[in-house]
Length: 269
Image: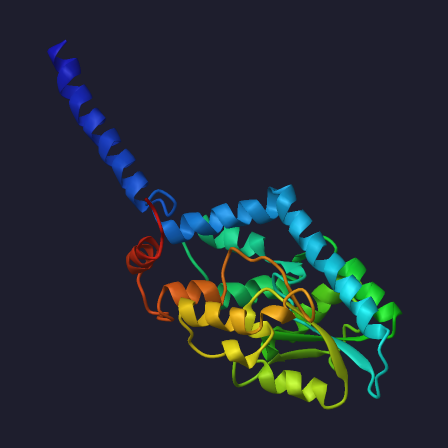
């Protein structure tokens, strides 16, 4: 019996050390608000029928507003300007992939994802854009995806047969993230009847540049009559300018600092 105890103790110690080592190295074992939050928001986008309803609501309103706009005379051809990511393509699988590795957004990982051209569509999106095209409205896809992502992006759009999925109508980011100059480029030749996006900067230069949460809210109030009229917003709880504002637009924060910023911005009782 004594020999058994002597032999068993080192084995138990070995297993204990091995188990502890595995736990500490597991990327999903450490509590992290940001990473866990990406999983939670992705779960909502992938499984909540309410999210599907919100997307349908947005695109149903867009169709009504488009019909109203087309009743008015215009000296220019009509156009819609739309964002891509989380406006009609669902990138939540990318967020899940990253979060399960204990990681947030990474440029290289994002480029790898977009090259796969496998993002699915949001509920109601394809039907709306095809309807707009059937009414002789041009769709311009203004996105902050990079030029290097052009092939994968076009492949993704063509996979679902989005209208006008060509190099003329896909306007990617070049030097700056602001979309204002690209919007003006379209406005020079077309009457823009609708803007669709998930981020406020998809709609107006008022939201360009680093903005605080209060400044963004003030901008929304200033343009309040446009939302649901010319501006159609799709819900995105996963990322965006709203999240950047929580971090003070500081992209060098550690995960721990981001967690603290989130807690400091929450209201409780």
